[in-house]
Length: 449
Image (tube, rainbow, N blue to C red; front, side):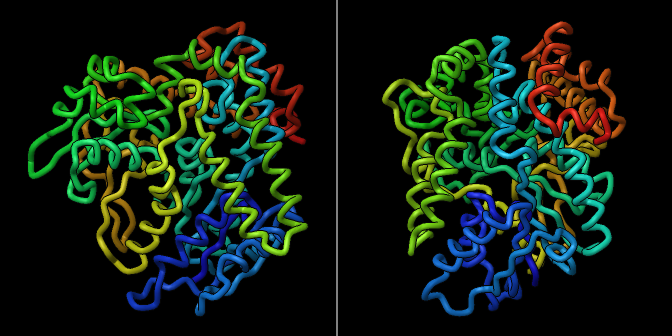
């Protein structure tokens, strides 16, 4: 089988490559024979090929490795296409953050104004990719990790239908940590999680037919041992009666987050821009670029969501080692290629899964995946403020999709203005003007360039 990795010169590609090496084997018909990397930068591709060759050193039978700047060549005849692109690069991410922060609003990659603008400028390229895949590999499954994952997946489904699946490691990590806090085996526990990408809640944790989440919520001592307990505080989790996705910190503690980010020496995007540039320089000059990558990756993961942690608090080592989106991607590929049934939380078309959200909306819910692809299981329904927040944010996402398709400034302003973390028509207009001036790819959406 052929796997194409779009954004193949990106920093996190070795995670996917390593998971494929470890889990896709010939004994059960899931073997990946060839991997094609695609990127717009031949320099990044050259460096990443050297990193991956170091990763497979001493491992016989590894897939053949190819690199190309031609998208049609990369995806032609592929069985699976993994998409993790970043339109405008980290320079664009820094602008996403700073334009909002300069107005006193949250500047973050996927949440709030920054996330909507990231989606706006990414959608034209995502749709181009979808059309090329439809032409060159109509039988391929597209596994989308390009952020904002729910919005991008929903748009690409307009071309490729349900063969586009959005993935994220946050919900599975949340469920795993909750189960382990109670001393339970995560594999034997059902995670009652539902919502949108980066906006969902764990509302139940079921073992042998019994919901044990109330037991965990009643134990502040156990909650404090989890990432979410430290992030939100046991008292707030008890008030909610659920455990939110970590990205909901930016909603529930918005002023705290904005103050912390504005008070830091650099934003997350600026940190990544600096350290990632250093990685590519060091790897290009090293005789062991894979070792350079391992060291850089550890530092990058350890600093994740640092603005939400107390001073001096370090990220949990077990959480960092638990495996991320690459494990989700490989689980999907194994389930589809071998016909195995696997239960995974994914971003898929809603249909009738979550009441109160449009049928064509992409939602994040538990699914069963087999050779026919994913099918949503009966999820925990959203009610009250959870449903209201999810419905509003989904309307913003759909407005941005329409704005990108039509080149409509009015629809983009409306989507920004009704977002709960902007909540101002005047601010929305200033935000869009600022982003258009700072990021050429945003201006191109409206000018047609």
